[in-house]
Amino acid sequence: GVPLGLLSLVLRHVSAVRICRDEMFQAHSQLGSLFGRYKDGSGSQCMKRHRKLISSALGESAHGVGYIHRKQLRLYLIEEFQNLVNILKDFPSLLPPKLPIILGALALSRDAILQHYEHNHNPPSGSKAKKRRGTC
Image (cartoon, rainbow, N blue to C red; front, top):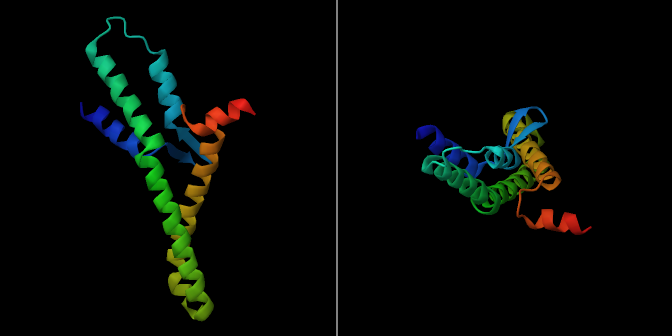
């Protein structure tokens, strides 16, 4: 239904959700373990369809759309910070009007950095980082 459709849409674009400050909800590991442990006694097609939909959304987030979105966000932040630094070097008096933009960019970059370290600490199943970690 609608809630499952919304969940799959969110999972395609988000791999970790910030709960409070540095607390993150890892959608990949939490939902993977939830659906892995849940046994449907009747073996209904509905539960199989739900499992397939969630696992495909998690896979797309880990290897497809989510990676591209995070990469584009990192590139955008790097370019914008470079532009801000160059503008503020030439015109330091623009700092007060640009302060909300600077604070917003810092908040976005903090989220990107936390997501990067959280992803490296707990990579999704099937990723190259997880395979390399097991061999070291």
